[in-house]
Image (cartoon, rainbow, N blue to C red):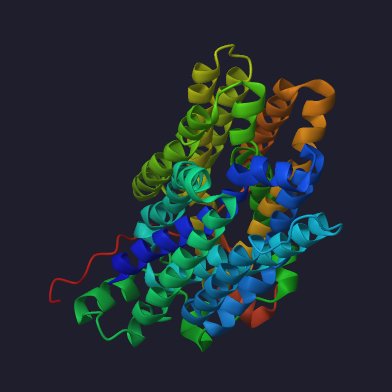
Length: 452
């Protein structure tokens, strides 16, 4: 049952990016219809990411308190409504730009719950040894949704106009959210279709085993939330958040500007741009799954420091090389392939971010991952406006070289992260210590006892 729900989180993840990326494909038609410049279109792109960033920590805290089932359902309904409202902005009015910015900001605010709530689900449902591949599947939805968007939106635009694409995306989201509400439960104990064997497997390995058999925070007093002071003074949290800022900046270049870059700068026509702009997202899908699998296997073999942190640092460094090289390639099609390789390498690291926050935060994984994701989306917000500004003054090659440099900074940040230093250790609860608590942890595979 846990893997069916992970699969449905993959679907919701795909829908969330379908609703985000559709405007980058329809952006040219919207700009023509409303007489917007690239800079003004950038403000519309940034508005969604700004709303998404600002409501991350609130979305995570709501998921911690009320559970991923209800919070995700409410979020999907919210963003379905505002996706549809994007198509309702009237033409030929003076305030059209302001209305687009407001609608996209509110859409981003609703979407803010998706990944913190999913991470809260992972912390409650997925054993430590399966979190890499579980997060790999959830974030493979990013590539699936963003990759499906160019051909779907292009088809709808050509045959029915750009507004139709937003109606269709809205309907898909509302349907997916309804199925999630019917199928999901907040904990495996509540779900009638979880067998005793599966429940035993889940409960036996939700945390890294601790030295000296120390009880976890959950064992001592239920799902106690970590105080915010401990979160915002924690070295691991800040290092992961800085790295995710860099990650978000680079990822949102592909979500917001890659299609327009291929059409306007590289000179590809509408259909060719739609095809080649799919490549980064297909690479993201594949590399999310590959990265999640490597994450779990390295963690089992050498521990989470190498499996989570080492993999992420290596992947982001490789992404920097691909992006820097791709920006120099002359041929449009070859450049698309190389830059897609950079997007794929970047997404090899995706499961590490979310697995580490689930490992160190436990019952507060929604809040901590929301804080981290806020950093990532601030990076995305900066991309929306800064990328065309750099391109206008120094050229698009400079925009991609800035992204490559941030990839390197993100890779270095992972060297400061130790997943063994948890926020939820027993000492932190009893003594009120605001520092993270190091444990000599050992990896334990989620294997059921022989008598199960």
